[in-house]
Length: 593
Image 1 (cartoon, rainbow, N blue to C red):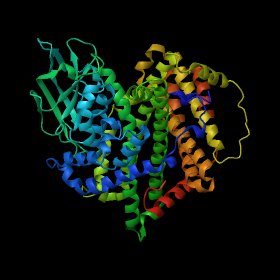
Image 2: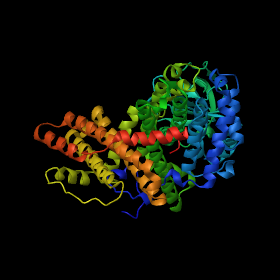
Image 3: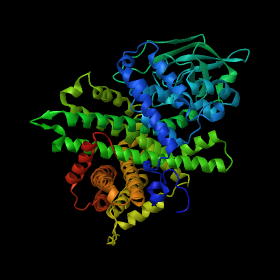
Image 4: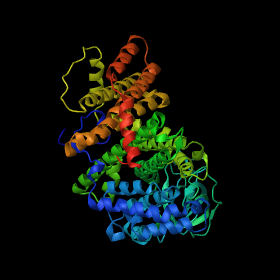
């Protein structure tokens, strides 16, 4: 097992060594150059025009997207033979992170390069790709994705848009309504999902925006991301050539699901950039703003907020790029087995669909925390529409809804792992039964190695035991009704999220210590220890809530004792650790971790 690449969901039952993960400290020079190019683009082409884009100035966002295309930023995922750069998956995540500080632009960029381009890139035939992809990669054409309908949001496959084959068999006639379509106002190409006749599942079609029968509602008035185009799209007897069907009949729902997997982890990368940008605004203001004769960055209450912003962002970064490398490794292995690059990419990402869902939830909630506390640090100025942080606060809220709501993603993450277990792809019940039998045994008192994070290794084992205990017991106790017990599923999902984030951060810092030495990693160690200290309390709460929901009597008491044992944390001074983290941030006056 130790010599095999980790599989999706396997983090629950497998001990991972830090040598098996990628950490952000390992970016090569070419990747750093791409990140710098993205930073420069945001500084020069996006932020100076932010007020004008928010007012939906005609043609402005479209022109900015075109400039991104001229620099090659729209074609990072696209193979070189189709006009792109063909970089690996984690490098596309890096670019998405650094463009994530671009407010509404990051939404337009993400919609074009992700859900707009990737269905065609991965499911299109050679003729379709050669016709459209080069135009999309350079920004000459813009793309949009038409899935959501007034009555079909989270339940996407219930869409009512219809496709009927014409009498001559040359065209499909599309009729229906799509809503919340990002980039609709200036897109040249729509990927439209519809049901042919009385099909059970959706089919996808490539529809050029100038096709007769397509009309658009005015731009939606939104809480945030005001600069991004969002419109309803109406299709009234829209004739689409049969050769513009994407993939095969009824494969649209699968396309939608697989593209959403990609969108979820890319959302995590994008909000990571937004979080770092918000931290920069917060610490700069805290250093400039004086009250009671001192900069507010000198006060403990403010330092707590700054440090916690850093901790949550660092944790998200660790998990996002760990998963990105796992996906790259899976893609490479599938290519070596004989798969095409496109097919291998889809399959590799699908293997880690549960982790993608975890990261979507973790990322959107990390950003929400960061921008909320950044507004608080700004005080009244943070509530003023003249401040950048007010915009960041409003823009952040959509991320808990985008790419499937966080509630849906929590349940999906659990469901996908349990399905793997039922298929025999993941042995969960064996380890779960071992944990259950451990409850009636005397705990082992193991001697810890003299390493700075040895105690956190022990905590991590406990977190995984709680996840196995609660999930295993819930499956056995609730059986088929578990799918309806959404509160329990949410608890299990939160334990899984906390466990994945904690392990990812621990692995990153263990590897960093190996590379740079313990002395150079004092603040990283403080981040890990503080995060584990808090995660233990959160996991205990989620575990207790779940167990009390489905267990009774002695069984309940036994499991609750297990949860308490597995989350028992030793003495630790979180105040001192946060002070150290905040002081470094304050001194650098920017995110520097």
